[in-house]
Length: 263
Length: 326
Ligand SMILES: Nc1ncnc2c1ncn2[C@@H]1O[C@H](COP(=O)(O)OP(=O)(O)OP(=O)(O)O)[C@@H](O)[C@H]1O
Ligand SMILES: [Mg+2]
Image (cartoon, rainbow over the protein chains, first blue to last red):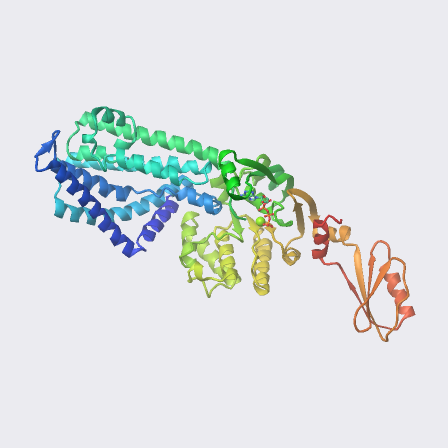
């Protein structure tokens, strides 16, 4: 059974490697984005050692990690919508595998590729140019990796749920764009959440967004106590569970509405 | 219970009714109007293990919709489907591992990979054992004469080649039931013959149960014994090919070639048409006119060089059925 999903992951891994030029442009783009935000925040800091107790090097670390990870976390939001639109959902459903498992496996395959061939080079170049904080300790680094994995699934589950809307909407492009705005702004990858007003930070605790990149970054920087870290893990797990359950619920409803376009 | 049991199954689609032009578009945005299109209406049939059944009907009759429900892709609105004890749309994952489906109009192969890579992927997806995979692959590639193109990317294949590759893809895991939805569409005469031969052998040797839609009556005549005809979502006929001929194909034609040019006298119940070269065509109803009497009669009266009787083409019977003439 696992063999099938490995095959899907391998396929999307290999597919990713097919477009070499696009790939190099992508790495360049990632470094450029990190660099631009770094320059903006350097100007804002104006040579001060810290703002609200946050040093420039912490800000840099936040950008490198969250923007770098965002290329690994990238989900194909149109996986299901495209298949519903062009009727290929029919041949998908003929395969003796869980459609959700297949979605995830494909995503994991391309994420692995992105991790090795996009994130790592972009990280190395960015650190050489801008520098970055080292992890506070080895145990913290391991906890950071754990929360990164959770963060990945939080984002994936958000996309999973949103994709289910395509059973009811002919075009989910607008919905996905709004989702992306929420994720970009509220996850801390553009404005580090430290600089959000206090009330906003309070509200964000009750949304899934801060658990995608910001929680791992905070753990990496040693900002959270062990107790706090486990609360964050619990929240990440909670959101993954809730989002997946909601997605599975809509999948069940939606499946009955499937029509196959074209023949 | 039968192997395949379809009981009073219905399926309708919701179609957005939109009038033309900008006004229509705006109206549709504010108050969309939907119309229900009944694609399948109360269809019932049973198929036993090892049967090979032709499933035909005019365009839009509901054939593909029925096949999609049988393959677990679409949910019926009402009615019951059970195949080998499975409820296709409820136990999809376990069920589809045991069936094969070929959609002539939709390829299941990976567009940019060589055919063989798609097969390897399917081997992993279905967890096909190495020896079974090898055996099936060699056998099918040989039977369908595919040696020349298994290493070519799918996008470079001709339609007929792609169709054969798709058929193999659907059969690698040795399914016990196969649904074919127009597996010969766009395939040339020779290719069709190869596919028919393949299907026949699979049914005869492996006892694979098959349901087969097509618009080519030759496909049916050469492969199936039983025929289900549907039109506008309802079943119109279910029975053997032979009995459809007996029941509806009572018209016979006798072609008479005379030794010299002469007119035939009128015969009761027989329509006479003049063909070229002293040939006449005599059409009559098998139930009204006895063919032996007619032939004897003719042989006594005229100097006849040749006599041939032609049975009606199944094609023309079906044509009449579609037109509501029988
Ligand atoms: N996705 C869909 N949305 C709306 N209506 C549909 C859809 N699919 C099929 N229909 C309608 O359902 C009816 C039956 O279609 P179906 O594809 O089952 O016909 P068919 O017998 O396979 O015809 P053909 O011989 O042309 O392939 C048609 O009237 C068609 O317009
Ligand atoms: Mg069809």
